[in-house]
Length: 192
Ligand code: GAR
Picture 1 (cartoon, rainbow, N blue to C red):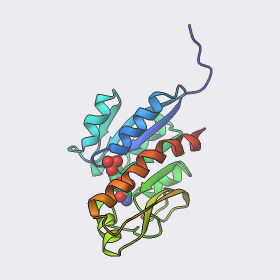
Picture 2 (cartoon, rainbow, N blue to C red; picture 1 turned 90 degrees about the vertical axis):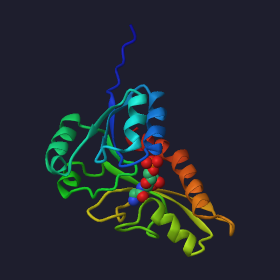
Picture 3 (tube, protein in one colour; picture 1 turned 45 degrees about the horizontal axis):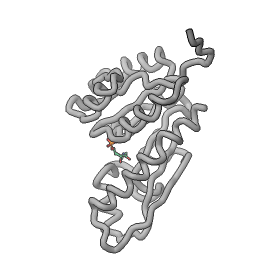
Picture 4 (cartoon, rainbow, N blue to C red; picture 1 turned 135 degrees about the horizontal axis):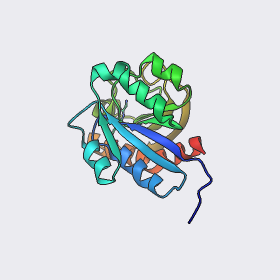
């Protein structure tokens, strides 16, 4: 029998939508023996992430706004995750979560913050603004969560050049590629 002396590190993922990043993270950590994805949490019962997580045999949990106040936090405390990853999660993180998990909640944002961050700046809204402003460069930011939207300390950024012919869809594609390339490895680095 193989004895694993290393403590299993747990990752909790929060996602509100399609879950392409969550799926990449799940696939990446399937190959890492001392890390597991405990639960994928979502506020959205119709989120694509639910099917993706289930296909990989990962536990999912849909929660209501009311459960978000106390119940979900209680569950997180009992899981005791090494890191809480927001991968396309659109609700604000309450202060009591941040207080209980200092430097353990990280978010990915599809722009080079501080550009194109803040309330309402998510998904396509970001890419439309990047397009409108004819940016020649865009990218991704991985950062710690604080009490505001998209202002916490930056952990990692990666950038990509845009061409004059790039439309909103192409900007989204290029940004998504960066997210899929870098996010899981950055999470791994943080919990190692
Ligand atoms: C990602 O592009 C992520 O950066 C963005 O939502 C998308 C989720 O896609 N997050 C934000 O805009 C947060 N402000 P996914 O569900 O396919 O991973």
